[in-house]
Length: 83
Image 1 (cartoon, rainbow, N blue to C red):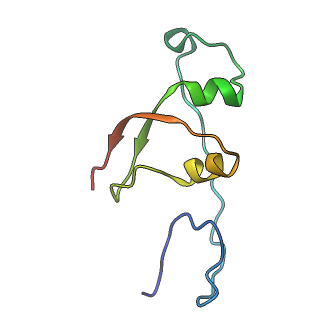
Image 2 (image 1 turned 90 degrees about the horizontal axis):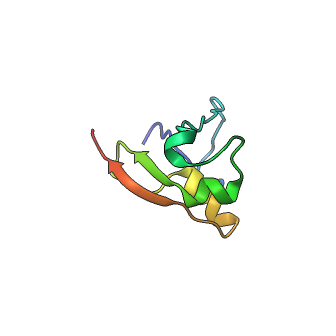
């Protein structure tokens, strides 16, 4: 493999790596439809249903891994694994 792009929670000792870019995520929601007010607390965010998109049919993302590191989890209600 010449190139792998994705979320990797830690370095793999057998391979060298370089950060190519940093990404940011936005949380899009309809406050009225969700019955919440801004800003969302982490507890409120985790209680809401989430839509996850994936190109490789994975049901979890780097965000889910970060939540697990805090012993938190979110609820997925729709997963779209469209290639």
